[in-house]
Amino acid sequence: MDEHEIDCLRKAGAISKDARELGASLVKEGGRLVDVAEEVESLIIRRGARPAFPVNIGINDVAAHYTPSTGDKAVFSAGDVVKVDVGAHVDGYVGDTAITVEVGTKNWRPLLEASEKALRMALDMVGDGVAVSSLGAAIERAIRDVGLKPVTNLTGHGMRRYSLHAGLTIPNINDGSTAKIKKDMVVAIEPFATNGAGQVYNEKPGNIFRVVKERPMRDKKAEEFFKTIASNFGSLPFCERWCTSLNPEAPVLLRTLVRHGLISSYSILREVKGGMVSQAEHTVVIDGERREITTL
Ligand code: MN
Ligand code: MN
Image (cartoon, rainbow, N blue to C red; front, side, top):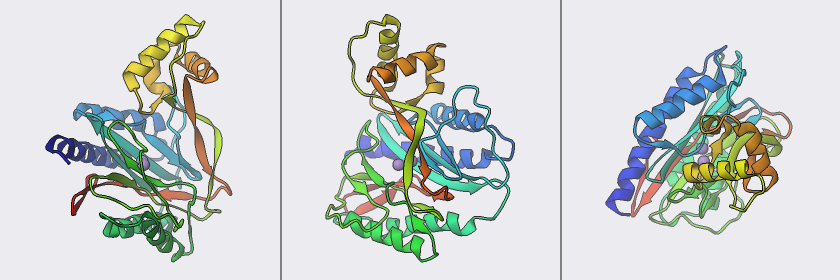
């Protein structure tokens, strides 16, 4: 791994960590989700990085892929279990990290601790030559030991420059995979724990999107808008909030682009039985014999 790459990964990791901690500290009863998302993203930019994806704020049985929209009125309520998942990149090199907090209560300590402990177990083991299924097994064991379930259809992932999910999948169970962690990989490990069934389903499309492919359109306004999006966000996920500052008609134009297949939207991921979900995530760089957790 060259000097520039590791340097960017470290910066991105440190900024992601600060963003995560700021986000967690801002989650308060009556506070607006959109304010938290915007403050976190502006910290990332102020510190000289860019968001690698819109801040994900998942409440209770929402595991992932929810970010507030422009003018979103949603607020945090006492007792909510809130996942704050943030990412920053420096020159395309990403830090991806998440934490779960409760709003004003301590009802879900075991749930929050289960994903944290599972993450620690996996981080203790990760390194060159380690099978991803053994990481999954450790995660699964830590969560099942306290009577909860891992979310089996959410996984950690490898990352490459400007690519959030590349190469490896790191399961949250022993899935029997023979894939191994290798040196020079960058991986995000992210156990999810739940008191539900242990699976998420695709609910309605949310307002996080990614570019799929360019194609000519009759609607020239939409075509122009697509070009703006593609040049601003490239291969990384983006959201409606980021688009309304580029074009006030963004909500309508985004729907047009989805309909024509130029962009796609991520569905909100919700636990199938409405179980509470917790998540913990760090990014690890396997730099030869060494491993470095960049978001710690
Ligand atoms: Mn994440
Ligand atoms: Mn991730």
